[in-house]
Image (cartoon, rainbow, N blue to C red):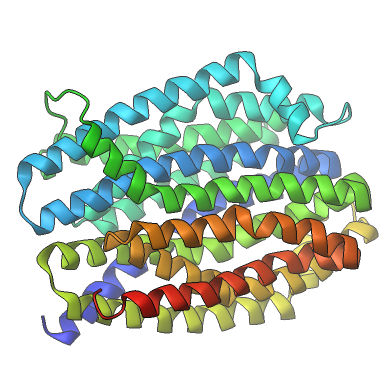
Length: 436
């Protein structure tokens, strides 16, 4: 394929992917802003303690959505219509199972879960309210992720982006209405968050029912081989989201011991702002994935190399822009979320932003290589990268560096982990580069 055509496809898919993910990151950013204004430090602490649950739900949605849609794109490249519908149908079955499971946890175990996450008596009620509502509305998040991923791989990245932006703008508007004019408190914040994907789903279903899609639910029993591919290919994305929740739990517990609730509130600002950075690279990931998968299905390996080159160059440019802006405007950014003008929280958060965001380049590099491995069915390499950066390296680093350098060590544990994993990712890429 002509290089200019590949570049045009790359720009189209990544533009819509990044814009859509930036919109999605507004979910938590909007909550953080409005909660900080309406409920202060205690509200921020409760929100930060609840976010790992959102990460787990969102990660499960990506497990199913990206896992199923990646294999769907490969079948599409091979023009295997039957298998395209089988993989979508089995992905939908999985969504029903996980949705019911999350709802049951929400009904009976939400308070115990909040206590495990570290909520004390001062923030338990707010944390429990947020967690319970998230879990009860989890099927909406799962279905939204699946439809967005499949429709993007169906050749409609602009529609996926539109759905994500509609969801995010709805969340921001409802956040303001529920928390301020209606004075609904933390329930208003979470209610706005869980209603947002409903608007996205309605838009996407309108497209699905128009019969313009190449996938549909068919009469098909559960296919274990299809489910295997869904979980294998979606696992790296799931681990990234799951680990973000686990990392937040670990950070929260360590910081509680070092700086108390004020420290957790400061970390909440840093972690939530990092969602914007992660969103840029996640958008690139979701943008290049359909191209990698379809070119792989067609055995167009030269085009895979071109897309990978474009993606890595984009990672480099975006990394310097993101870190430069964060470093230069750290105090201004933190003050937006510091409604109580808490000097201690400001000092901790500003220092944290400057250190934590040094991971930016490594995060982008690892994200792109991971989806490259996933989309070309080198799932073992993708799993290694995801597990190392998400669980195996980061957790010991948090504990070790926090002992050595207190809060500075806490902030540095993230870039150190991503940097070490980048070295391994390069070695794995060199192993596979002769056969993409």
